[in-house]
Amino acid sequence: MSRVGMQAIPIPSGVSVVIERTRVRIKGPKGEIEREFHPAMEIVQEDGELRVKRPSDRRDHRALHGLTGSLLASMVKGVVDGFERRLEIVGVGYRAEAQGRSLRLHLGYSQPLAYDPPEGVKLGVESPTVVTVSGVDKEKVGQAAAEIRALRPPEPYKGKGIRYQGEQVRRKAGKTAI
Image (tube, rainbow, N blue to C red):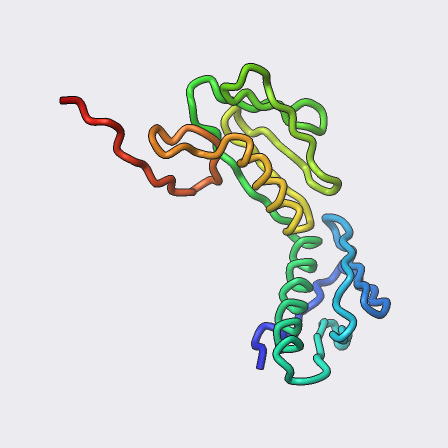
């Protein structure tokens, strides 16, 4: 049995949930998020909780059961607390600056790069070397952070590039002098 799928997801006060067959819309203090789920999974709201029911014990239904429960829990957490990823920029002359809703990055290329976030994702520049990606949708926040990191991933010799805060970059030894 799926332990994740069997857990009830509590709905905090100030959060409204609308279930229309396979589509679920959750609205809270941080924003609104909507998602389409697999038609085999039945999502029920009862006693201030969300529960996911599966039709059988088939392998694919068990997998979908846990996935649906996990996605619903992330949606509720997103509209209440939100999600955030922090990126560090390491390197001489490497920096970021906010430009309206988008981000302008100086990463050692001949021209500065511009990154426009997807809808529902906010970018913040705390310092020239720290970028914050936040929003209510965990998937979009993670994808936006990965796209920014991909503009200049950390290289293994000096560690220069964009990395997640707290990420350990494996360093290689360079050439040794004789």
